[in-house]
Amino acid sequence: MIIVMKKSATKNHVDFVINEIESKGLKSMQLFSTEGTIIAIIGDERIIDQNHISTLDGVSRVILVLPPYKMVSREAKREDTIIKIKDGVEIGGNTIQMICGPCAIENYTFVSQAAKSCKAAGVNILRGGAFKPRTGPYSFKGLGKEGLEILQQVGKEENMAVVTEVIDVRDVDLVYKYTDIMQVGARNMQNFNLLEELGKVDKPILLKRGISATIKEWLLAAEYIMSGGNPNIILCERGIRTFETETRYTLAIGSVPIIKDLSHLPIILDPSHATGNPSLIGPLAKASIAAGADGVMIEVHPCPDKALCDGPQAYTPEKFSQLMKELDPIAKAVGRKF
Ligand code: PEP
Ligand code: MN
Image (cartoon, rainbow, N blue to C red; front, side):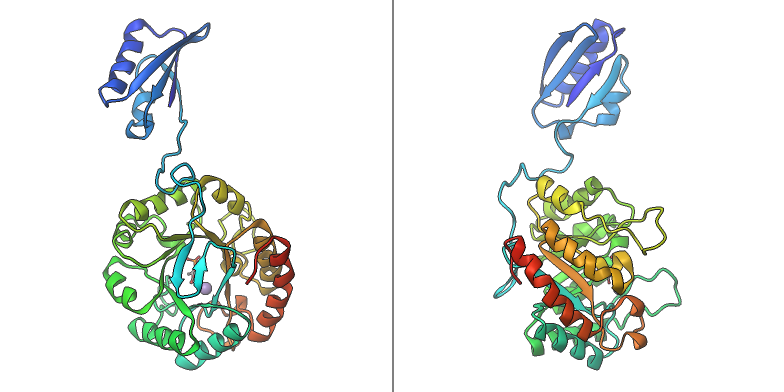
């Protein structure tokens, strides 16, 4: 942290600021310029409240040097984190993982058909929601426990890892029993109680970016989970809300190189929820892989017309298998494989 004092600041102002810093056990160094005194903090500035310092008499500006998150930062760990999902399935290594399946688990037949076709196209991780966070209270909210049972059964039958969303702290233990990866949806990214509970579990967490969250807020949400004791976090960019109305959200492809720079955690992209439109999902899946994503989440449904949730954005198995063929050369071009 660098504290720039006003030109008019007195020695008392400077001494007060230094005292505030040193009372927290940190050291400070004063630099003198024609524009006034500059105080540099030596040590981990994150224990100091930037807003408090900004309001002290004589302070002009406070500049942060370190990011507010620690454990998820690239400084904390130089090498990329690779997360083991199950035997032979990792996220963050050289293999790009596709995470596919229906938006919601509606019945065994649909999930099984989706899983079979995705598996045949080379997908190792099956998705499906048993608890659906819906914008309106009258929409289908998922089958709950019955949905978890179906997902787990189909995952076993097809030898696929499974991921499903947990939307409530009260369901953490239940969802834990049925899934390989626990998903935190965009609407829950800042549900700090939920994040703290997921810090206590020993299964990987797929943390979606909130629809209006900054990358810093997203990484701070990941820090909640990691500082709680769970280092296995996969970030998922799923589009943010912008002024654009042609797509459901705006997929921030730039998140990939930014996250790779700021953090050691793997990142996947979700063009299905970002665009809500199959004609855009394919091109953005390609762009995601080209940008260096560690995986892509795509909703696939055997009968999109009959889907109870997000049917219009679902890929049919046929279209999805064609897309996988088109993604292959892009993965190879960036030195990755499926
Ligand atoms: C989902 O993946 O099922 C979902 C609801 O996504 P999001 O939280 O990104 O809206
Ligand atoms: Mn969906």
